[in-house]
Image (tube, rainbow, N blue to C red; front, side, top):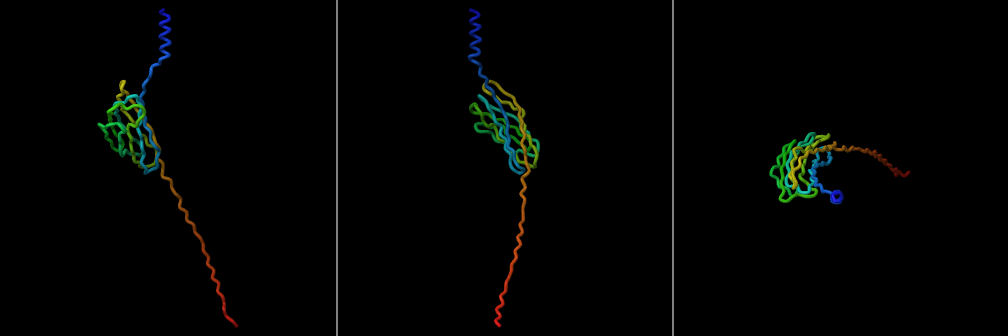
Length: 167
């Protein structure tokens, strides 16, 4: 009887695996040319995100020009300067699935590699809280130069005169 119970428990464990709800946060940026605006997006994925806060820092030839919250988030802090920012957002309803947490727009000041880093990320989810850091780099390329070519065309004009002298 005991053996059959143990066997039944083992079989039930494999038949009904536990479900793991994982949350993740990542940042992605686009490569740009000097003078163009770069855009970085903080993406989240969660079974039930309730609020989130964190810090953003930028190194390299780029500066923050704006930080805006994603759809469904209400900011209770959204401060930024050229090289750093902090944000804190809450939701009226839990955010589920994949979603945009924030969009960071940056101006570019020269060619090279810029790095944007998220730190101190604290998020409350339905089954507890998560902490995270994330960073990514993006390339700022020189503007392509266009070569100017000049074409010279030689024009020769020939004039013929008729002599109408009658002798």
